[in-house]
Amino acid sequence: MTQGSTTTTTPHRSVREPATARPIARRKYDDRYGPGSAGLRMKPEEFDDIPASEFVRGNRYEVISGVFVVSPFPGPGERSLNDYLGYMLTQYFETPSKKPIVADTLPEQTIATTNRRRADRAIWVGLGRKPDEQTDVPAIVIEFVSSRRRDALRDYEEKREEYLTAGVKEYWIIDRFRRVMTVYKTKKTRKSSTTTYDIVTEGQSYETPLLPGFSLPLARLLEKADQWRPRKQAEPNAPAGGTDG
Image (cartoon, rainbow, N blue to C red):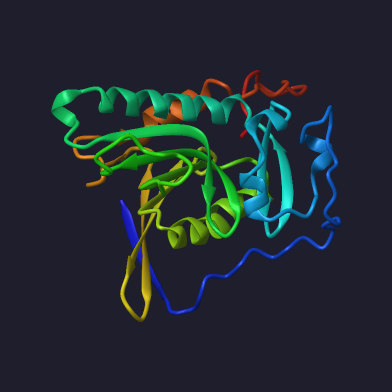
């Protein structure tokens, strides 16, 4: 497992606002917010006040730099990773000998930063009670890297800064394409903050003091995503088989 650190004394850098943002207007589909609402100007607090029933199901909704963002749900490869990790965590939480703390996890969780990010998974630990998913900052936030380069850059750069600044203790980035998991943590002092990171390779497991007794074997997790890789069509004079990323 590779370790590293960076130190910064600069304030939180906001995400650059898209130049194509539309004036605020209530564009809705069937009296609900959906793909046609993408690009609306919206404050995070306005987003918080929208009832769940007013969103068209089947999409992910966020507010980034004052803009309402709509994106499709992840594909089966990413969902299989998330589902299996949720299964492993549930087993851990329900084992009395490995549960000295009250903990819980949810997929597709909105994280309140300066924006409203939709994280792939959140884990709450150490609260001594059932978490309030709307107000309690998760101890751990997890993102599964998408095949789209733009989304991958957000996972590694923009979201990392936002989550750690919001109070998240560990940020896990699970990259099924590079076959690694990167864990970011922040240590703060009065004058500066130091961000450290661990890189977990496919043959390794990750353990954290936030989840005593829990071990995450990365290879086992990646196997679940591999089962959903589409097969490439065989080219003439080429051996059959093969997969894409």
